[in-house]
Length: 133
Length: 133
Length: 133
Image (cartoon, chains in turn green, yellow, brown):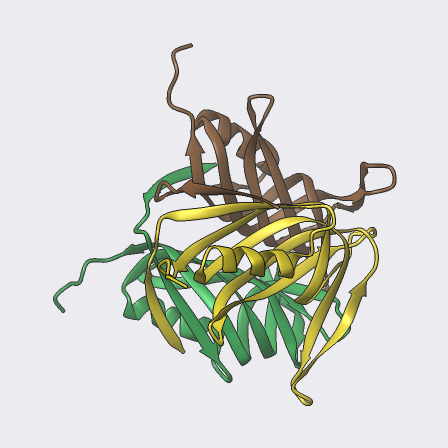
């Protein structure tokens, strides 16, 4: 186990995503725009579709058992932002609820919001100081 | 996507709900008593029953596929408080675990705690200054 | 309902658990090493196995319907640390996603990480002052 203590900036960004927004794209764009080097987030909402993956330990590859093409509730979205090759990367897992009340989930690959994902709380923020280009 | 930066009050209310408490009612009552205008929360616990809904995009109405009348674990409860018509409103999604280990969930309509919901962390708090009546 | 207001220390410990780590053991060890008297945490990751329990209200005992012996995604791990008989105790609930995308879960008894549980955000921290032995 590795541990790291953060002196939190007591600050949160509350995001609201709207119909048609692709979650990973929007969160990455936000993280880049704000020069985030790290953050955690959680959210709830609803979707028109989602690709949720499972990591196959044997092949060391992601498979997508949950390729969802129907309206679902986002029961939980938990994830974080970390730098990879100098750029903020989104890592998130999601649980969704279907029309029959059953729950499904996996590693978030892509998902489109409908009608909202609200609210996404971005906190535990570490940020790069503004730099000259 | 809309974003808003909150200057967090570094403060949390840790709530414990007990047998028979209805979650939405208690959280709304707490938000009103504390004059909350916004907050996020998360919790775990257990329930005797729950009505969990799914939003039907076609009819724009909530349906209740998960009308649960048995003891379940609350695997996650994530939600927020926001003002609607000047009053704090609770918006929350829940995942529950049944006797067979299967997970179910939806938009929280009502749920009764048994034996506890602990602990509910209310943070990211915005609050109205005390006003004269 | 009981409520308690915490003056948060604006501080988080971000933990990363690695292959083979047993989650409850590691979190308890961490809480003891840091003299935590209270904290909340959330995390995502993946596992090689997990025992997830359901509380039987009739017998007042935990049963283990989800004795999982396969690679799963940790879709959400939410829990807290509280003192019991003067020692920090871990209380956590977990949702996991299987190879077919289905979600399962319960009260966390034991679980082994593979390849990572990242990141575990320990916040809402209350801590005992360092004492002489």
